[in-house]
Length: 202
Ligand code: PGA
Image 1 (tube, rainbow, N blue to C red):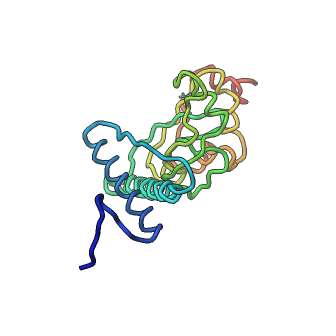
Image 2: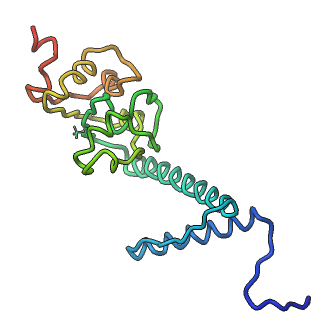
Image 3: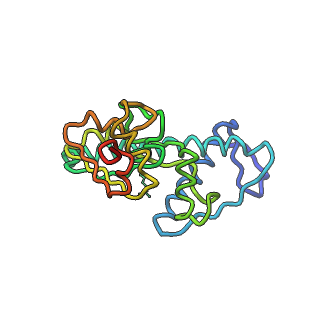
């Protein structure tokens, strides 16, 4: 065995291996602490040396997020599918958080929240700056798989988007229009939210 004069533990491996090892150690620590209901408190260095560690942490976090979403879809399937789905509608026309552009095939995933959605949520978060920029949402396809759907909207601030969702052409920019093609979806509206519908206005 080679002689050493080291007075402290030393690991000698390539940098990518160092980054992986430390990132995995941090991830394990976060899980451990979270399981105990406590946050993990990290002292992070600046400079270029640790950047590979942080990159690896981001990759692990993404992987975990994707696994969470796949697990959520699997849990729905394992339960035999959704019998009855309640939905709200956002001012962007989102159902779940399926913001404009969400495809009809979309499944549970991480999505960037629309500026309009973040502004609308600001009261609940005590200021727009506190509103998360991203959310995990069931996808359009996950929602349309439900056997029965009730979309509920109240208040005059929803009247315009309700009209678009109910009377407008199906449009990926207004996810709620996808409900027009569902065999058992009903919009439950209070009078204020229904105010822009043609049958109410005429
Ligand atoms: P709200 O949100 O019920 O707070 O109006 C509805 C939604 O964004 O889906």
